[in-house]
Image 1 (cartoon, rainbow, N blue to C red):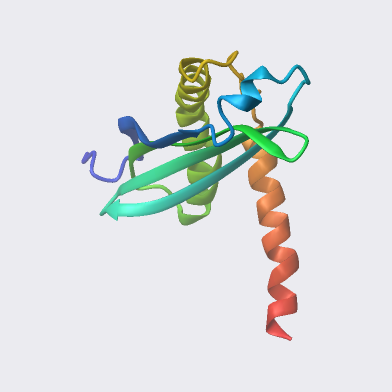
Image 2: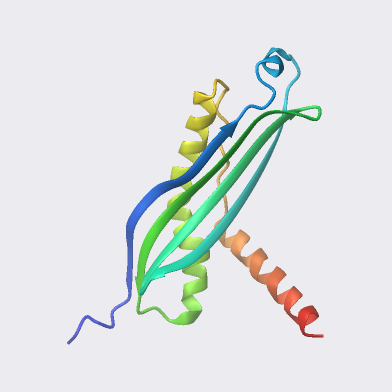
Length: 151
């Protein structure tokens, strides 16, 4: 019996692809006593890097403001390279949109909290994410848009 058709799912590498911290209104805004508002945006992107090798990137943008002035803006992208072979095509979407981001996201959470803390602020801890619900919402949105594009 040959093992060449067995499903393969292996993490090859997890790495911080990009990160930035901006404090455009420092130092004056650091003297403000008002509590800032926090806006957090997340995204997931997947691409093929070689035969059977895929990169999945989870991106976070954390922006805090006091009134209309930015206290700090953090953007970070955490990536993973995964070897995925011999899976049915209908399983690839959930693997790339749910399983891989669940592996990469804890690293992103730690890096974002660390970057914010190193900038002199209390760390912002990103909450847990239900990537299955996020994936299902994206699929529903895409299927709702598809018929409109055909008309």
